[in-house]
Length: 257
Ligand code: SF4
Ligand code: FES
Image (cartoon, rainbow, N blue to C red; front, side):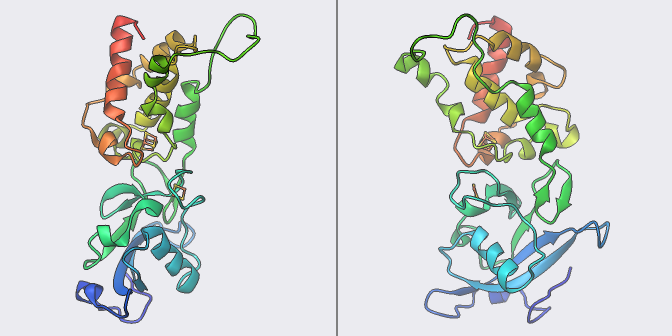
């Protein structure tokens, strides 16, 4: 592990040191990886001062903008909408932009690393292509037959409620990358793809449910799920991911959806 800032031997004791009215000193411990420099990843400590009400994303910005511009991570909206900054913070999948410093034990080093089960390209950036391919494979769009309607496709409030939870997905991959089945075999479609299949399978306006169920009946489909609930725990949108997967399994057995 290396520490590019002030004191290489600064310890977690420094973390709780109050340095201003609102600022505290923290240690951000980031797992860095640059394949152009080394085949091995290494943990690097950064001592910075932050307001405890700032987010982990703000702390990463502080490191990138003030200490080491080569630190690489994804983010876009910074408000929990785009899903691009899922990472492991203190060993748990979270969105950096939705995680307050005060909520992640800032008196100890805060660890930040890339989500698991996907190839790390650099630092906190992983290869999301297989994740989005699984998403595309379940055909996440409305499938209909017959003539174009002359007005919007109507749906009752109860029918809309049926899949309301799974419409909230922001494709952050926190669920899929917290799944032990996915860690062991990246061929598994993964929770996020199933959630997005659920969103259309249970939409009363859609006619592609049977096709999607057959896709998920595959050896790498829903039957790989071991109901560990990691996905539900990880979802920053509060989606009942495991429940959605169970509903898809049940639809496969009963062919009712
Ligand atoms: S279900 Fe939740 S954790 Fe999974 S990709 Fe969607 S928003 Fe992220
Ligand atoms: S940056 Fe968009 S969800 Fe965090």
